[in-house]
Length: 363
Ligand code: SF4
Image (tube, rainbow, N blue to C red; front, top):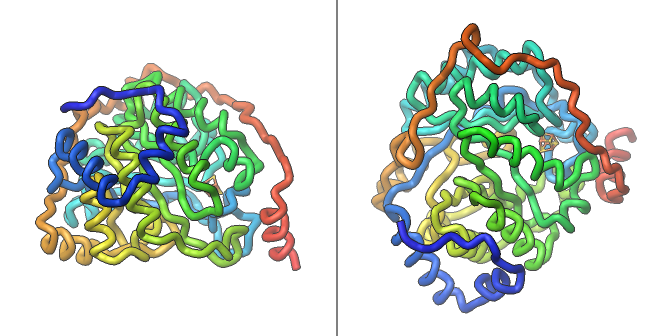
């Protein structure tokens, strides 16, 4: 791998990279991409929503927040067998990674977390990379996940520190960083990115990239999501972003984080194959496959196989970038359930559009 990793990027430098003429930006990003990755290999992940909806948080983009009327009913945590069956299907359709998402504010010790740990063990033993996105996490919980065989933990920063306050009032940006710090105390890799199209400025996008790129080490994986404006959420009226915004964001991410896997995540269904191809050229090297991405629509695996054939892309094998973790059995675990009741913050500042969306639900 080439390119020295810098952890001192400034917002001004990032804005200047992001705003250069598109052909120059693409050339720079693609050159760095080729120096550090096989440009014809794309990692494919499948996202399983192991616990959907009913979330206590007020994230303005999220249809799973219980306070908004989005037609999503909360359900219980999936069984181990259900998850195993879905993971087998994902493996057969070419995914090397399963990401399990639970609509929780934070992890609570107890039976449900123990069940998630069993899911992690089960999928790791199927020789797939396992990722979880379960909300905020203590150090002991991170260690228990690592011991079960977790490969990656997803915890997005969503936006810049300033704009975060315009989207979420039930937890702070610093809580997000604290969870990432807890994950970094283990060998679990970090997946953290954000969403564009929430009404933020280019400065906010650059601010988010400053926050991610100045982490040391930088996240192994950075998802770039385009907002899918779901009816009933506070951001329902946001216009879709243009493909050029996505391409510029992917290319800039690639330039400042050369070793990271850059993921095309939510909003891919709204992109043409040509648009996606331009993102791959700009340095994206991962996608989520499967008809649903948590609750929003995504391409079916067959559509992606057809696109890969069209573009001559190959799916990445598991454990290429990092070795496969060991799974320690629950009985042999050295990190016990501490029955922790962590005190994550609740800033509760007022976000008018979140309040309005909540009020509509009551009427
Ligand atoms: S993004 Fe996560 S934490 Fe926020 S409301 Fe949705 S499920 Fe809850």
